[in-house]
Structures are given as C-alpha cells and as structure tokens.
Amino acid sequence: MATNTTKAEETQRNILKTAMDLFLKEGYEKATMREIARKAGLSPGAAYYYFPSKEHIIQYYYEEGYEEQLEASRKVLEQEKSLEKRLAGVVRAHMEVAQPYHPISRILFKTAADPTHPISPFSSESKELRDLNVQMFVDLLEGSTTSLAGVPKKFLSRLPELLWLYKMGIILYWVHDSSPDQEKTFRLIDTSAALIAKIITASKLPGIKTLVNKGVDMFDNYKPYE
Image 1: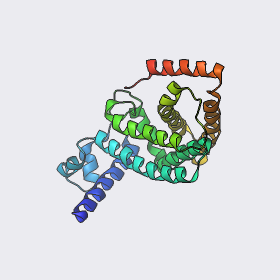
Image 2: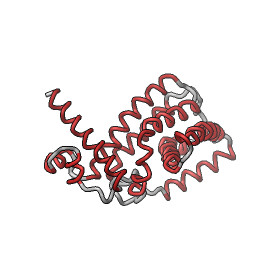
Image 3: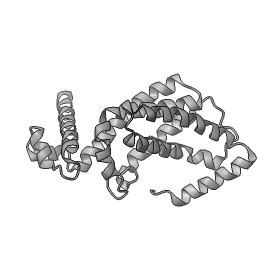
Image 4: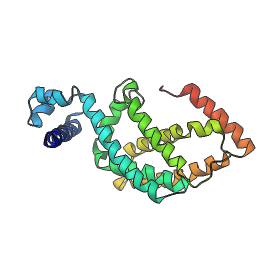
C-alpha cells in the first residue's frame, strides 16, 4: 500500500512539473490535458485519473505549497514570539516556498485574477484552502508574547483574515517584482510587518479604536468573497 501511495504521489508530482513547464511555455489557457499527459509519458486516461482538469492540477500545486508553507511556518512560530517577528517570519517563509515558481507566477496570476475562476484565491472552490491559511494567522496571533489585551474585539476577530489579505497583497507585489531574487519583496515584508504590528498595538487607543472598528465594518460589507 505504501509503495502504491508513493508511486501515485510520484506520478502526481510528475504531472505537476510537466504541467508547470507547459504553462510557462504555452500559457495556461492554451495548454491541454492531453498534451500534459503526452509530455508526462502517460495516457490521457491516466492523467485524468489523477487530475480531472487543469484546475485540479493548480489546486494540487496550491495544496502542496500549503503543506510546505505550514512546515516552514511552524519552525518560525517555534522560534519567534513577538508579533512583528512572527508575522514577518511567516510571510517570508511562504514567499521562500513560492520563490522557485516565480517565473510562472505571472501566467498563473492572469487566470487567478479572475474572481470567478476556480483557481482564484477568492473563489468558492478555494474556500477550504483559504480557511486553512487564515487559521495559520490565528495560530500566529495566539502564540505571540505581544499583548493583544485592549485590542478591539471586532478587529481582533477579523485580524487573521485581514493578515491573510495582507499576505495576498505581498504575493501580488512579488508577482510584479523584477528585482534580483525579488529582494524588494522581502524588504517590503520586514518593513510592512513592523508597521502592522504597531497599528495593531495602537488600535487599543480610544481614538484609533473607533477608526479601526469602522474599518472592520467596511471590510465586512465589501469583501469580495464569502
């Protein structure tokens, strides 16, 4: 059973690598499952057995990436305790996992930018993976030694989701970052994480608390997904 599972995983990863190479060469929309199967050395039926569509291949890519991100994040959260360092470390870890795929990121972004497309991070098909990512930020906040006492409850309840959206913003910047090894992205992570940590702490102040709660209300009314 273990051998069969390993072989299945190897086949899935072979299909994934082949598909990514083909997406980079021909573009996501032009590449076909039949061509992916042929280049992977499989029959179309065998490829469809593992992945019914290209969207399922991309979903697998995201799921595999999430597992790597989760492992990298755990190491950060074990070592870092301050909110700023935990936030910067986790987002950095996620981007380091994604870094080898930067050449193909723009191609995937063209498709993922369509909110109705299944591989969009805001689609209903992506909800399970989105929820897992948000949970990671719940863990980040709960294990921090930075006191969150006094942070508005409404803001605190939405904070994990807002931090996930912050990470989405970092990813968007990274996709368009042409600096060597996307070094500007990693500098942005450090700078913005420090600012966000200060904003969270400042939200305890009476005047800021009112503004933050209004911001949360606006987020609830206008967020582009369920």
